[in-house]
Length: 166
Image (cartoon, rainbow, N blue to C red; front, side, top):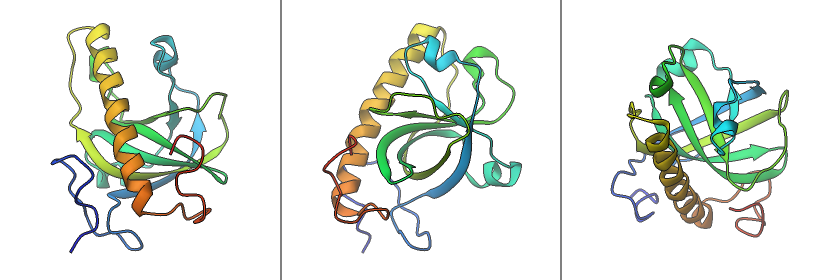
C-alpha cells in the first residue's frame, strides 16, 4: 500500500523511487540567474540549469516540491518546461520557494518533486498567469505540509514541521 494517498489531491500519483515511494523525482542543482520575470510579477523563483537528460525524465508541468537549502527545508512550487505564455523556447526549472527571501545565485539546492499540480499551459495574459501561479503556490503549500507530516526531512528527521514553512 502506498503511503502517499490522502494528501487531499486526487491528481497525486505516487511513483516508487529508491528511498521515497512518494517522491516523483529528485533534482540537485546550482541556482542561476533567470530572466527575472517571476520577481517582476511578485513571485520570485530560483532557477536551475538541468541537463537535457534530467529534463527528459520529468514531464513538463507544475509540481509541489520540498526544497532543501543547506539544512533548511521549505515548501515550493516548481515549474519544469517552456515558459510558453511569454514565448519561452528553452526548457527551464524554476521554483518559487514559499517563505524564503534573499538571493540564492550560486547556491546548491535540492528539490523533491512530490506531486504534479497541473500541466504547463499558455495563458492569455500575464494577469491570468499570476492568478494561476498563486493558486499553484497555495496547492503546493498544502501538499508539502501534508507530505512533511508523514515523510521526515532527511537533513533533520526531528524537525518535520517546526520551522521554515513546512
